[in-house]
Image (cartoon, rainbow, N blue to C red; front, side, top):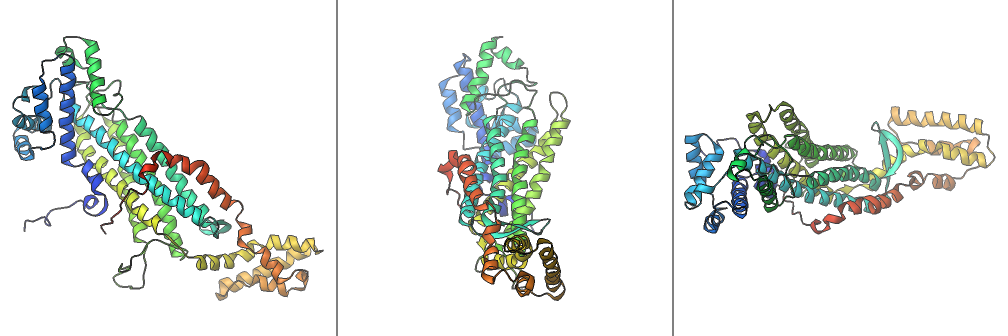
Length: 481
């Protein structure tokens, strides 16, 4: 059996990531970028006096995108060198210019500079999706800022917060990731035009020792490729620390997404919150009633992959030999594209999830009512003391009643009847039911949570995404599965 279903297919491209992200790491993007780099090099060398004609450059430009992949594959089987196979394949299409393609350059000139360009473009795409996700959380937080809910510490009921305030915790982590991403993009540099071991010796020969021209060529190429500068020094390759730094940004996003979706999964278990569930979606092949948080689970799964994948470039950076060794190549081909595609996927799924989160206020209130009477005992006690009660006597009474109510809840599976017990007690006869009900208003237990949401959005979130507002709403998520 020999068909497209008889060989391994990568789930990242088949099931998860967007076409836009897949394209950035495609052979078409990669090798057309190689050709753009060869054109930039030829143009720069011509500007600085090397005998290269406009006709040769125009010939190169005419074939920048129509790559003869079959020729390149055939040649690589013979020469066993990917860069030289594409130099020769390009030369077949550009017979007048073939003699000046790759002039003075080493393989890392196209390989490494293209790697940086790919990561740069991929980070920009990640940023667009990240700000859209943050904006979704903003809308959700503002909409639900006044819905009181149990806070949880150790996944045990704790002081109340609001649904919207909890969402700001998720958004804040992602804004920190956005800040890291922005810094990395702002400081991204090309390898530039550095020669075989980074000494630019080949260009010393080409320009007959004219150091000014050699330095200018490096700047010209960087500018033509959309970068301000290159790394000041390099070996044969740019420092592999860059790969580690970039994947650390993706790992940071993955950590934030994993935390957020773990929270959503816990809350869906409590039936307080639910991710989108389509009309014909099946939760279980056996249990037809189930509504599993499969999108949040997928985000959690891919996030673990990204975090683990970030270790690879760290190991590569730590173990490079002197000016370079080639034990980075196979690793980079796998770790960097796959980490980006997985990061793209978790953000797209995250946009989908946060765009359709359902809040079940009745279940939230049910859980509040189960716990709030215990939390409100101090407030009830203080109000009773104000009405003339004995603090020590009332404290002991409310302690005993709380134990009775807790026994009823835990051992008998019944509702929390602490308030009824308090109202029935002679020691609390100075308080009426409506007065205790007023004390039990959940919004009196959320502190400044609603105000914190508004302040967070106005003072922190909006300024963070304002520079990218033109991209808001521009992500068309189409989940494959």
